[in-house]
Length: 220
Image (cartoon, rainbow, N blue to C red; front, side, top):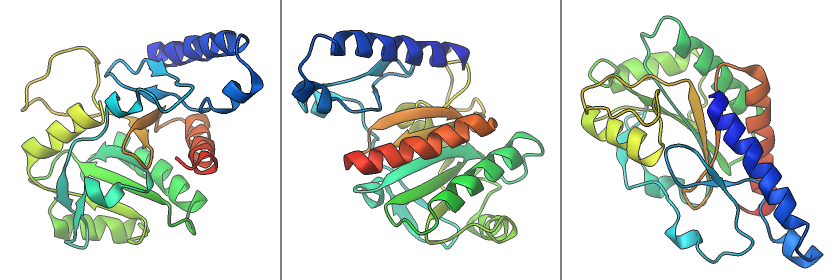
């Protein structure tokens, strides 16, 4: 995580330096948040829409939520969303991640433009019924927060190829290697990754909430 943060800082400095050579009009068009195109989470800024179509975006997926409703990548178009990966029987890390996601839910409880997505990495155990019970226990708002289950291979492919979500970035993983990550991923309305945060750290959750507001202000 330190390396990701360092890359972010370097990117901010580079953007600020290059911005000193542009006009005020050009500066205004540069988004406040970077885009992430690769699994090493190197930040990229663009002063115009040119090149955005070639950036990484989420691949198509479709899973069931705690109410047995299909939720797909198409469902998320036009909405900002925050994603994480968990499993209901996790004894240590996941309860902390769930509590952090509840803080994000509370911050945007009346905002229909923001959606939360928690994908189970143990779907063979986390059935719709199990997710329903977990949602009730943790005061999950069905209107805003989806707990998702489905085919394990499809979930892991979505996690690794779409969200770049895994520990030990750069280490080759097989489809049967267990996925466990503390990262929260921020995705804009066009299904492009705009931020990564440690879901166990209160300061990073506060930053995530502020960054969602930035995307909303920019119309992203």
